[in-house]
Image: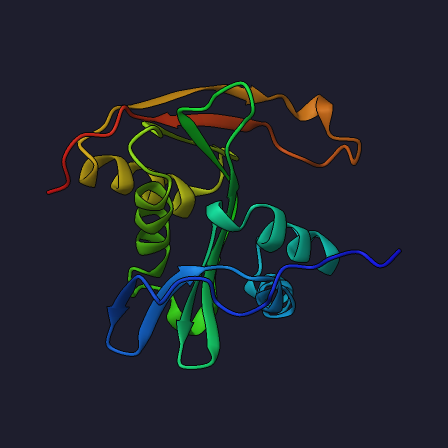
Length: 180
């Protein structure tokens, strides 16, 4: 029996345009470019190319990409935790070096939150203590959403087997308000 794969065509037109940049749901055909972006971005934990295929297929509604023409500028991989239907959890977000400073990551988060519908009122992510850029990103997202930011212990360093990992602090943003 052969497995059935979703069509790799973009299911929706691009959601936002900023010059040549377009943000849309990820599809399995984006996975290789996402994997390559992670390899070259520095600071992002690399997962298998297969993981990005699965994310863009099984979690298509919560995974987004930003394209600059045919080039992948950024991506966000997220999911809705089964026991928290009002929450979307950002597993990984990345922007290619040449597109940094152009608001790509912020637009990806807003596309993600808007694309989840009104039932999703919170966004969560874990951030290591030394990741100032991610902390700025999530706090900026909260400001634009007029939402509170709650930071708590997420995952302690001892959970990670390599002995070099830092703790992951849990950022919980919400409930969402109106945008400014």
